[in-house]
Length: 398
Image (cartoon, rainbow, N blue to C red; front, side):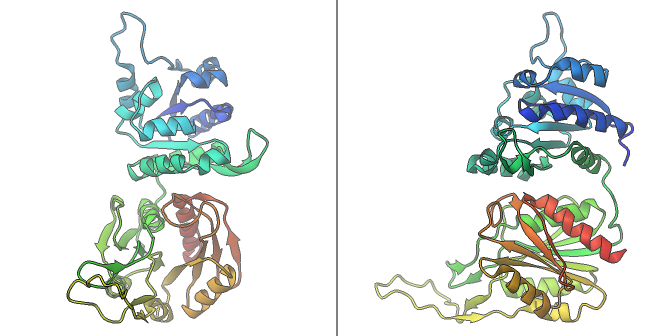
């Protein structure tokens, strides 16, 4: 995809991966973009502005405060100039500043002043990337419109091998292209995505539920819409914003999820079932608030219907993708669900694997097909996992 006519501002923060920013610059230029570079003060310790000036044919911007007599409000001008801002590498420090609205250098001021898409390419040691504070900061930024690419697993500056390596320059360029000229490979397709937790009431006050946040399903809905699909998102309670261009129907109970999914599936080309469906519900629901008692409370649960079995059995030419969250005998259990529910693909999540599970922006999954083909994906963002699933779906339709 061409970036011809697009203006990209490349931000470089102070990490050892800054030397790869040169290749990001060249890749953006090869795609046709006009690129200007902004460097943080700490980035100068790893690479000199002269390198970027020689290649970009633009002055490299480093100083928040222009020379005396220059009336230009540089951070506003550059924020308005760019069609897209790419920060590669984005260090833990820089991510933390942006998540907390701090702006003590030119690059952070530009990002706060910009209304353009912003793509962050994190790079740091694996322990830093896994730290709860970093994950919290990244979650906040992605939930508020920032886009990310990587990091990847590989050899790090310390010599260790782990998650935190800057995404390859061509991957960063491809992500930039997707943001400015998204592929429209799913135009004409109608995809139903279920997401989030379900709840079953005990009384007017209390309910049982699970820990799903909906992040995986919302990521799939967002990426499918970007590819041109007509997306219906059926969501349990969630704090996430509905992706732009996606139709969202809110549900609470398993019965409501079943009804909405069955209705939407009638005219769908595919169903991607990421919602965390409760296996059990209370046998009776009290019409009045249950009172506290020293004797405790006996709760009798009955099984919910697994309505995905019937949808899979009667799918015809439509594609049905399910998810399996497992803690033990993961592959065996996932294969059993794949067969029992007549699925075309099941995505295995192992809750005990670092970086997977609920409430984080990363995931570690294995794609399992009925032919016993298994594709194990490394730790990556949930949006990247979504793209792998959609890539698989497109191949089936080819």
